[in-house]
Length: 266
Length: 257
Image 1 (spheres, rainbow over the protein chains, first blue to last red):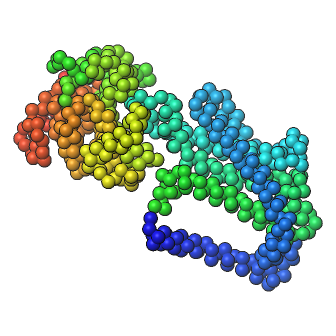
Image 2: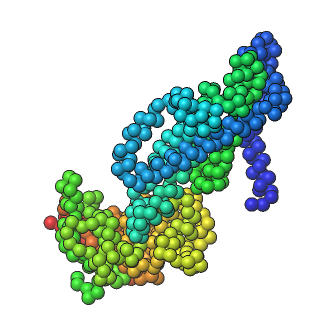
Image 3: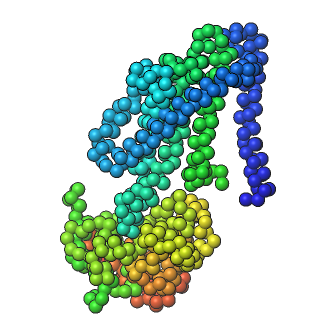
């Protein structure tokens, strides 16, 4: 790609993002303006500028707390996703495993897992990050497992027939056909899981945890009427959540270049 | 017709499906000599696609045997003795055109340089030179099917199995690919088994047309095609072409009664 083509493409991207940016700025402006206009109390809703100032002033407290919680979310994200992918692979490979475990797994998926947070605190040390990682991990596990399995099983029968015509072994069919077919499904699930991991870690911390953790900080600040700090904490959580999501989305672009999402940008 | 050394020998092949108690094929006898282009034609449900799959060892016959170059069908498949083309191109979206063509070569353990050389030859053969780095979804249906033919021919197999390869294409693309297929076949001189719904396509391409009738699937008759070996656009307008088309149509209508 030439330099001109790159700058042209970058220009197009800016144009594509422009409407969303305008709306975002407008929303912040309306938020800022209506607080002054309607005399909204700070504990109900602080001004965006106040939140931004707090975000910066309390950075030595907020950002390490965010990092602490982000590590929990990451641990849960990787643990839960890897377990989900492995489980789905086993189920796809051995029918009997699927017949025995899938109904239970689907039923378990309907359980509000976050309700287990206090129990996980009892199983693990409530002040350690492991109980939060466990919650985030279990939350990530189900969507990744179900989607991976669907991907592995959505291979066209014709493709299997073609591979058999070339005397391919089951392992070769798995490696050359099932895995590439499943990848777009896996990445869809990983994007969902990236959001769930952050939610899991933060909400689990609301039930109690280390004072270094972001969820604990947000909860304590809200209880002591330090609302701008609580809001700034939420902003940190949001930024980290978006970062994790984008990291997965960019990896998807690189790995699954043939997916419809990647095609539309060509 | 009894050949001394048939490439494909189908001997008393019967296939019944337990479900629904259907007899798809009943006591099929057929021999193909080297370099023949044989079309299997018949109405839906006559078992022509099943017969093709029995030859390729993708479906196991209930009775009877298939021998390919003196080997069992199973052995021939394991040895990768044939290439196959389906109605849809069955290309892998994550592979480029070149890599799709190279797939059977990769599985056979060819080294990179040899693969590249052969893929280039194949692209040239199907007139897709320069499209090697494209992805399948960037090509038209007709081009995709040409990639699929190139993949099937990558080994230069002695036997090519084709299951309605042009059935999903429009008439004009189809006639153009008919001509291209003939020119490829004349260059490679492999034996072709070609399943089709189209009478004119079968007559135009083949050295013999095998007409099948349904329930149970069996051979209603075989029409040798005595058109000149060199076939062109004008072949379709020759009086003999129409006579042969009529002959096949009559056989189809009577169903071999």
